[in-house]
Every structure is written in C-alpha cells, then in structure tokens.
Image (cartoon, rainbow, N blue to C red; front, side):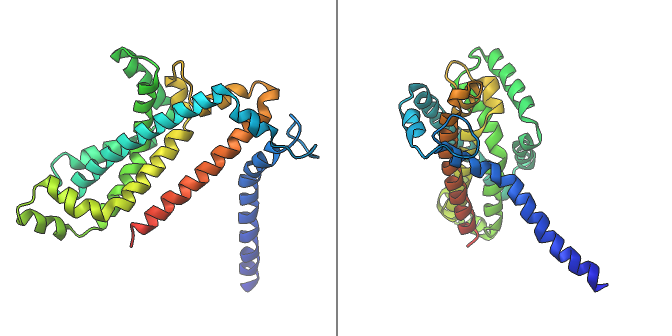
Length: 263
C-alpha cells in the first residue's frame, strides 16, 4: 500500500512543476526577446540592445494609447471602488430589503462572457447616443471590475463586528457617520486592494474595450493592432515587458493590502 502513495508523492511535484513551466515560460520569454537585437523572436539571440525600448518611448501612438488606458483605468477603478464600498456596506450592516439582490447583481458580471458584456454595453451606449468612446469603455470596465471589488470589500466588512455599527447608531450616528467614522477606518486596506485590482483589470482588459473603443484605442488594442506587422513585434514585446512588470507590481500591492486587511 505504501508503494503507490510514494509514487503519487513524486508525481504530484513533477506535475505541478511541468504545469508552472508550461504556464510561465512563454511569459518569461517576452522580456528576454525584448532585449534581442533582431526582429525575429527566435534562438540564438543576435545580441543585446535597448533600441526597442527607445523606439517605444519615441512613438506618439504608444504614448497616446498609454494615456488613454491610464485615464480609463483610473476613472473605472474609482467608480467601481466607490460603488462596491457602498454596496458592501449596505449588504453587511444596515441590510435594507434589496441589499442582497443588489450585491448579487453587482457580482453577476463575473459569470458573463466578456463578449456578451461588450455587445450589451455597445447597444446601450448606441441607444444613449454617444456610441463607442472613452465613456463607453469606462462603463464597460466598471461592470467588469465591480464583482472583484465588491467581493474584496465585503469580505473585510463582514469581518468587522456588527456591534460597532450598532453602538454608533445607538449613540445617534447616521448611516453616513457610521460608515465614515467607524467602518471605513477599518476597511481602508481592503478598499485600497479593490481599487488596485480594479485598476489592473481595466488597464489590461481587451475584449470589452475592443467593442467600445472609438478613435482613441487603449494600450491592449494598440498592441493587438501591431501584431500584424512583423517589424513591430520587438517593440510590442518591449511594451509587453513593461506592462508585465507593472501588472506584477500592482498585483503584489493588492495582495499586500488584502493581507493587511485581515490583521
């Protein structure tokens, strides 16, 4: 009986190692080839260069797409975080009749394919009269970011004793005062984590933005448009390396804030 267990104990680490290698090796190759002095992403490397990064910094279209993505991500993350904070607070503390329904609807977009969200939002903004544009992308990204933001903030607020809100209410505090003076100081790290995750989600999102982008493409859309041109591939990999570094940093920050919220 001991022999099969021993084999299983050896196979599991091998399986996990193979899976991690298969998943992350292609990602690790992107920064490597971004320093390659050749337009071909192939071995052996032709040399080491920073030229692709210099071209990246000198390309106005990339700067425009980056600024567009940053603006959209900041606005969408701010709206999603503020909305998620209100929804989580109402769902945990005052608990009005429709709070659970609203909280459930806020988390529902995570189950809906991005293509459906993009098409539905496109129909909505066309009916509203402003069509594909920055505001349209913001609306779509708020829908995408809201489920994670609500989940993170609600989990933290659910860990706060309800007696704190009840005591504050008994002393005459309004719901707004309870939220501002009793709950938010204890939930700030979770709110910061939700904002960081929402920003990262919006900044990297492609499918919904593809349906809703007008004349100002976001950075992921710009990258996709350049993949058709072989000579642009090294610059795209340099840009992808910077995005990868930023994404990992923001994800680590969000995780640190989430862990801090448990203390």
